[in-house]
Image 1 (cartoon, rainbow, N blue to C red):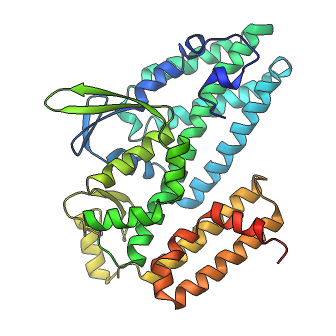
Image 2 (cartoon, rainbow, N blue to C red; image 1 turned 60 degrees about the vertical axis):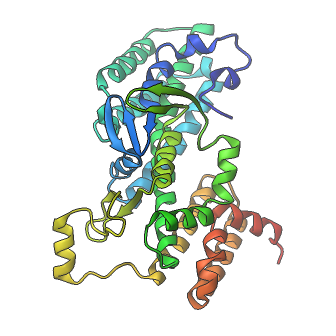
Image 3 (cartoon, one colour; image 1 turned 90 degrees about the horizontal axis):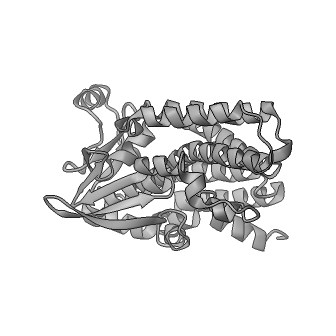
Length: 364
């Protein structure tokens, strides 16, 4: 289900897309529009190197543990909002207030951070104020449904930001770990090689299903002809910027000293985000991340993903345990078999693949 298409979401009511989107979705569309010209991306009048916006988004949350908690909260609120929508007439003020507070607090909080801070927050504040004002009016019947739809759209957009950053984090870390396992630098040729390994199956499937990039495209002119993309949601926008950056040789790296993400454009071997971090690394003798550490990082991330799916009741305890056993076997093999570590290990350590294998061999 694509919850951004409200006609598909509520087929039992005769409500047009225009009517539902006039106060929320059409306005938010401004914040999901990117224009690419050569290796640059233009965002609401600002110019960046392709990949910068995705990099900025990764730095809005301090650590993975905090991001995981926010992701779980976003998942719960998303599911909660859908339950309220299907029981719109019975929804009580407490439920409405809880959803509205989460949506407005989340959206306005992220709009104070890059890359969203490059867009005026006034329009967003007016949308949140408008929906909050609607919540104070006692409505019934179709008017009640329309209000809940607007609230739902606000909540889902808030959840989408958190989920998008979480998925982007996992993808960037997986990509960089694969570079390290393969012992490659981040040249354009090596970025292409790792991309073909990491995303050959998993993300090509997402592309085909429209889950990563599902957007309208038009050409725009200026000094050069460029492509303007209008994305359905923020997660698509962030993934696309990450991939657009890779396509022109820009890679998102994680500073080995402070942990901040930065975009490597010309100095592809750059390991630190600033001269201060580089000096600190030299003074303290910090070593580059080892191949063994990268192998372990992939293992720990996929087990975390399996636990998340189990906690959200996407898979059973039995399937989760089986999938984690398979992942551990792969991890042990990768530590002793360098050829396996550089090839099949990278592609096999995908949560969905492990779940499928576990379900097929659950009785063994």
